[in-house]
Length: 242
Image 1 (cartoon, rainbow, N blue to C red):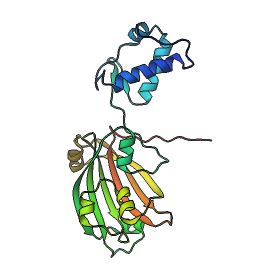
Image 2 (tube, rainbow, N blue to C red; image 1 turned 45 degrees about the vertical axis):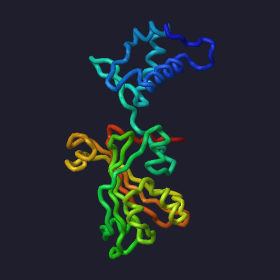
Image 3 (cartoon, helix red, strand yellow; image 1 turned 120 degrees about the vertical axis):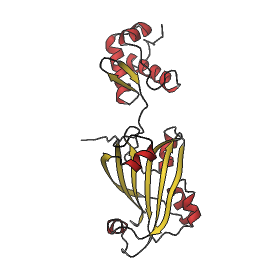
């Protein structure tokens, strides 16, 4: 029988949850594997049914498990959940969550953006911007498409953009500029055929669309980016306070 410490200040259901989480994160279970039943977990750990349910429910809420009626509780891949109040690059976000970030440049050009994007960047419609489209990876798996528009006030060599890893790091290295704040909007839609092919999902799969305008401390725009994420891999969580 697995052991729980009944003299510990950590609640028993938390001990059970942490032990199951260790098993899930050390690849004792693979995605799609069935978790032992509630009764089996009761017997393995010598705990009550309520304790098992509390531990499993928390892991389900955190995206590690999924209960399917008539099938059981299956191991799933937890979705990437960004910190809403922290402004980070994709690469920083992935590394902080234990993923290896990757990027593939799909398109790079100097172009005249749409009137909508020009307005968001605060530039004249006749001005040209760098437009960069990249496919983003987590542990080698495609999870997002980034369309980045850079205002003409910021000059970069084409090669630096073509091999770009982190735009925010490039801003610091080339211009000494630190992103200070951003405005984001989040919507949902389905992927078209081109997007689905790039993301290796079925046509019509759900995607999250994030639009971000990022500013310096002087409120100068330094990017407009549209980010398309696979909804099966990425989610947003917001904490509300009163």
